Amino acid sequence: MTLLYLPSVSAQVTSFKFDFGNGKTAKGYKQVISEMQYTAERGYGFLPGASLKASDHRGKDPLTTDFISSEKPFFFSVRVPEGNYNVTVTMGDEKGSSVQTIRVENRRLMVENTLTRNGKITKKTFTVHVRTPDIAGSGERVRLKPRESGYFHWDDQLTIEFNGKEPKICGVEIERTDKSVSVFLAGNSTVVDQADEPYAAWGQMIPVFFQPGKVVIANYAESGETLKAFRAERRLAKILSLIKAGDYLFIEFVHNDQKPGGNHLDPFTTYKETINEYIQAARQKGAFPVLITSMHRRNFDENGKIINTLGDYPEAMRQLGKQENVPVIDLNAMSKQLYEAWGPEASLKAFVHFPANTFPGQIQKLEDNTHFTPYGAYELAKCMVEGIKKEVPGLAKYLRSTSTFNPSMPDPVDQWDWPLSPKVSVAKPDGN
Image (cartoon, rainbow, N blue to C red; front, side, top):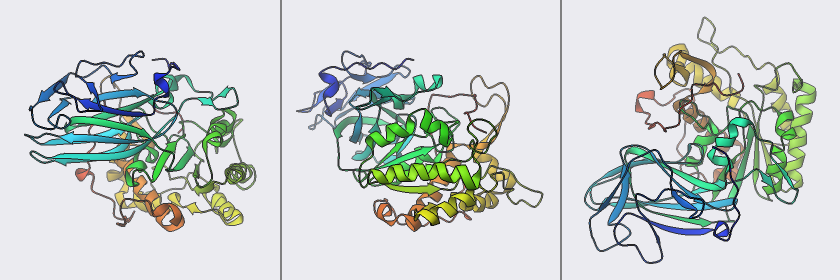
């Protein structure tokens, strides 16, 4: 798939109301029938891949009496200008129940496993950051890697994934917002919105923890990145073209920066100096930088304790935070607690370890001690939430819940529910 940018009058529309179903259309809404696939000319529609079913109970409210569902995950995409959008999904069945999980772009979690009971209709709102590679006012673009050409989060569309045991979608409303605080994420494969199962990272899980309309997560992390490469590929420039006073820049790099080669940085000198350049760039925009020490790799000794493979880099970041009066979320320390609570065996469920033939086209077993499953990524996101509560109170006030998570007491994996997205890859992300 190649990214296309088709500026037009319709591309500048920033407010939409869609009524899903083949019945009567609610006033002020555009009807979306089950056969309506996305076209560039129309600017909205379903993506191919799932068989959709339209149901109509012929009730009084044309918005809620009909809906579209599928036995497989399905995607609805709308062409929108770059920006932040509040999305409200109306879901449920006037004569039945429904269960849905909603993700956007590259599997960014927005609505978790939501049940509507028999005859009930509910609405869920979430806030989404939509971007393109163009850097406004510069004539330049982010230098994308070849694999990014197929990513949903670099096109000119807002793509919504409806998943779950029985999703029933009555309508979707989309409206641009300039009121949300933006939290920009700069990092590598341990932060990125991983595009394909069975991989995931905390950056694509953390949106679900924030109040809609108050905070939007703008995840610019990418697999294989280092501090130097992130800047050279104009990813930092892209962030700085959008970030505004009162926003946040979260910075997490180490796994690739420690490797030998042209992008290598030494912990107490060039690593600190380069991070400090990010800090000052954010401050010049009136934004708040936040440092994140990187999580450990899954590497246990004979006593079930984590072996540090990140050297002095986490400590260098802690020191820099104190020197520059920047909050430091110590994910490194929390991940040690988390992994040791799991132990060598249970931790396999949090990392990408699967026997051969678990997924289509996977002829060899997967053994990855750096990258996470959705379960592992979600638990790390909960660690991040605890770090935000402790270190970033100005942002913590926008969290949905004040409940506490103890990394030494992780959630049981058998209570975790993540319906698989249809996009699967057996290729390991860049970075190890």
